[in-house]
Length: 342
Image (tube, rainbow, N blue to C red; front, top):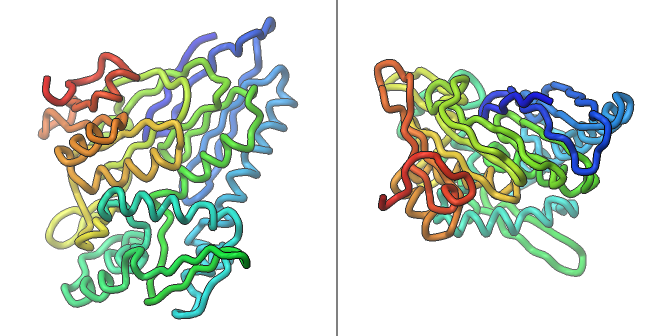
């Protein structure tokens, strides 16, 4: 069986390596569709096409259930209803968001606010769900005043989870939604099924996989691969300006805001994070991009995280890139870039 390559940031996926113990050549079945505001490509290995299609259907339903809960584009989703719930009145959380919320809060604290999904007002102020704009200082200040996890009161008691907005703050799932969808998929699918999913550039694989070649895209030209790793488990998530950039007055902006300052960011570097938990990989790729390269690598080293920062080495042509690699990433994926301190 030949191996294609998965490009992080592009729905170009690898052919599967044979499952242990399989005596006949398996069938590779693929499906591509639009989910969670992005393009998703799913591949499974099966003994026949019908079984593969059934497995794909189960995977799609799992992703759709997460989207129905977390999508902030859908008014009827749980987060959509939370964002519209009256300020000061408790909102009853379902079990899945109840379980998720403490994890979001923990990473918000661990990253000193570089990750904070309570930035809906900032997303709106910068027009990052539209065509982009540069808000006035007054509007930016107003949006920043109603952003941040500090405006939520979380209560877990005998009656279940309740969440109260103490200001007109809203959640945006862009920095964790894909990771949570892939995490749930890992939990729900059988442990002996071989699959790979590229959900808008975040790649996750099943625990049954032996290894998939995965290419990391150029930080500016995301369709152009600059390095390759073999992904045996967990998830790779990449954040960078190449995913979505807007040309606005005063210079380009990317689709990521710094929750601490309210500023929309634009940097030529990209940050790729490997983690066994796709949710954590998604959260950290955003947070470390917000921190900027040097601080991101320092954070990765101090926490033992597998991180690589790619920077264009030729600003004029964007033809190549240099990689700065945290020690944990270099150990898991040898042969890429320079380790801090080398």
